[in-house]
Image (cartoon, rainbow, N blue to C red; front, top):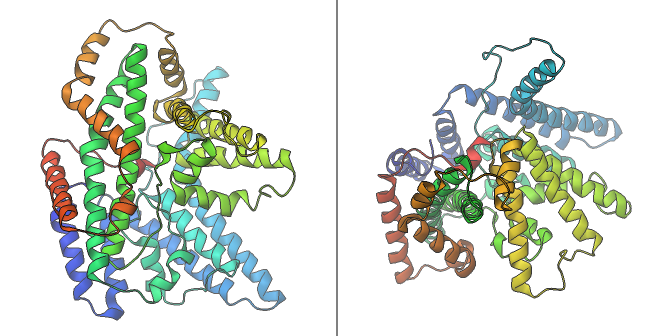
Amino acid sequence: MVFSSYLFLFYFLPAALLLYYAAPLRAKHLVLTALSYLFYGWANPLFVLLLFSSTVVDYICGLVIGAASGPDDGRRARRALVVSICSNLGLLGFFKYFNFGVESAEVIARALGLPVSFDAAIRVTLPLGISFYTFQSMSYTIDVYRRRAPAIRNFIDFACYVSMFPQLVAGPIIRFSEVADQLRSRTHTVTKFSRGVAFFCVGLAKKVLLANPCGKVADLAFGAGGVGVLDAWYGVTAYAFQIYFDFSGYSDMAIGLGLMLGFVFPKNFDSPYRSKSITEFWHRWHISLSTWLRDYLYVPLGGNRKGPVRTYVNLFLVMLLGGLWHGAAWNFAIWGGLHGVLLALERLRGRAALYGGLPGPARMALTFVLVLVTWVFFRAPDLPAALRYLGHMGGVGAVDPGSQLLSGVIYSPYYLGTFVVAAGVIWGCPQTWDWTRTITAPKAIAILGLFTLAVLALTTQAFNPFIYFIF
């Protein structure tokens, strides 16, 4: 079930809100947990077993850690923390990288001349949202161990935190310390609810009206055998717009749904394409992941406390692992590694961009170009395809004779107009976070208009899940 579907918009969401608000205060978390499990298990009920297992393990480990007081208890707390981390990473690693391991074994065997081919049945299906809820659940035990949050004793409250359907499948990654107080007590107000509706409608419009059409352009450009220079740059820029509006749209909808339920989730995007350096870009893009990696990986590795060389290595390793978090493929590793190298080079220059002496608009443009180049590895199906596409961006490589037909489609008034509107929103409009702080009558009309247009557009679009559902 996806947010941008009639099933969710007109059946699940109204029923969920009705049941949640009709439930007495003590039963709200139980109702929300049940609804979240229904939402998550809609595609495959077996996924629910994994989610429940992860929840039980981390709940027990949290109790053990929270009860620690003396030296012996401290050792038990460390063991419980190790169990929590290993179980979550083991679960994530198996489902995320098993297929990659099988495929790599086949490649190595063939390179050695061995006629090895594993049966297609030896594959696993990646459960939706596993990259998000394992990180989220793991942050709980780490925060309890670090005494940044108390252990939660009510299992339903903890299950509600882990499984909450607004952000379960694709984030933001909500740390327990960020919502611990809200799980104990929170307000439900008309102001908060109305802002949540505004967030949700804007996010839906981002996804349906901007991300999906831009994604069509990107799919055509990356799927073509050979494209010209202009078409190649147009295609990758369209993908940059697609992934931004798709993911920030989902985050807006998740934050909006949270507000409707009384929760305040942190901002996950902060106009990243306005960044003037790669360092700034990672302060603005997927903030919940970048800060998670900083606090739970970069800092434990030593951060910048062990000399400049170790700092550069840590930056590279964190971004490399961040790339692999997105998927078991060389392209993701290269994407993360490139960002790690760029971050290290900027740190070498004292946190300034590699082109720090240029005017602000030029630095913003060059940063966007670097991001576009790295997006090629993120979008292309494999490494050879990524290298071919980069060659087309540089004018190298044969152009498919049929590319003129491609141009006739991707430069049609609809797609080109959507592209221009998307650029205008990115560089000329306020963020959803700021725009929804106050809801005036004109804004309410605009929100209703966006929702209506998005719902009408859904009738013309095929099923198109959010990009980060596959991560």
